[in-house]
Length: 476
Ligand code: HEC
Image (cartoon, rainbow, N blue to C red; front, side, top):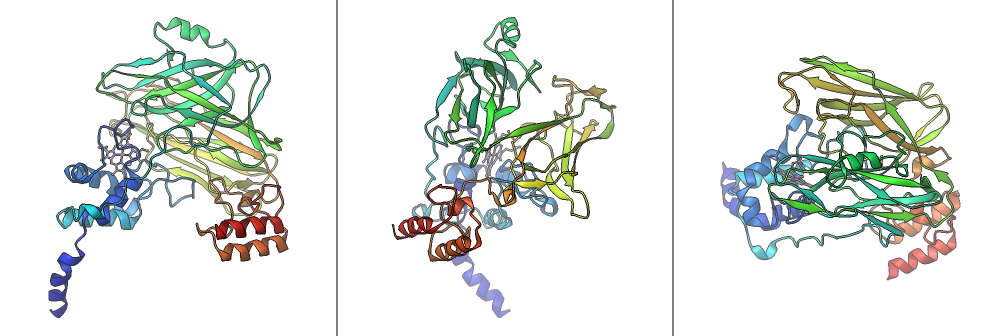
């Protein structure tokens, strides 16, 4: 009883309020998209009133089902199951953050003192990488009708590259952040898609699940809101073949007002010698039939014949897709390696997923991917009502099964290469630069190892010169 009164008395003091407890959660995780001019502009979340007025909608979108929360909440958009594998740049709220929001709701959703509000982050505009070597822009603005329908469009950009380009990064810059939902870029031999463009009276041509043409190159770049473009690390690069056009497939989200878009592509050329080229294996299965009113599993495998390091993958299906699971079974007695699981496939949120560290797949490994398709009327995305037979094809009513995997030939130590942004000098990875990093650095030098974060002067070796630079940084 004594405690009961104590809690009652303390209640008001500890009551959760927007300014102190909720604004940091929203501004750090939601506002980059949910503000004017961005893909989530229909629901701006930039101040107390906007969050208060939509608090139940937000609770629905972030809370999901407690038992299977990884990947299941609708927002932030991150369909991959975080309990299955560790992927780079995962967007999610922690259990604590979700409960803080729900508790705040229960406690009356008070504002608190506006002075205590978390400062709005400085959302960067333009390139995340820096000054591009080449910029290719859509020749003219494309008109998007405000008819509240999805629009899938391919645009051809000519490159006029007479020799192949060592690509360090390809960054898609949406011309209209509110309209562009995602984009994928490939190269084709010059002129080979022109007939498609010429046959369509508007700029570009309609395309849904692919590019409408064969002879396409590896996937060169992509975009989805929230993705971070990066240069390939160290001596890695991809190739843009000589004499090619780029095709950019853009998905425009439903809009309620007429708008235009004129997106562009930033090309960054590798300025150091290329040691390994990024290769792509396209795992594909055309041979499936999805009977109506049934749930069907489709599987494909990839036999690895020499050691590789896996660095990216993009599972792709259309609207009947329900879930994905991809894992690798190495030879001998080693454990199965989980790659990615998506419990609730969402055509709208397709990312090029990267593991945090390169994954070593030794020769003899079998990579297995399964997509489960729900061709029943329980699937709210089913384009056919009543359900109909579905086969491979590039229309909205057709289905697909493919996964581009990006990899390089394996070298010793690849599994220690972090694929995200390295904080130079943060050798123990605690997000801070201090004397502990100097201690780790000394150990590294004694051990002959040399991770990217320790090679301060980028001379491909770790030695006393790196210590000098690190100490200088710490004292700064
Ligand atoms: C990467 C961009 C992005 C981020 C980050 C993001 N959203 Fe969204 N949100 C969207 C888009 C786009 C939609 C429209 C639906 C869709 O495309 O999935 C949406 C839809 C919603 C909806 C409506 C969902 C529905 O189905 O009714 C709510 C509510 C929402 N977001 C809240 C949030 C909250 C809260 C956060 C942060 C915890 C957040 N969003 C983070 C882009 C984003």
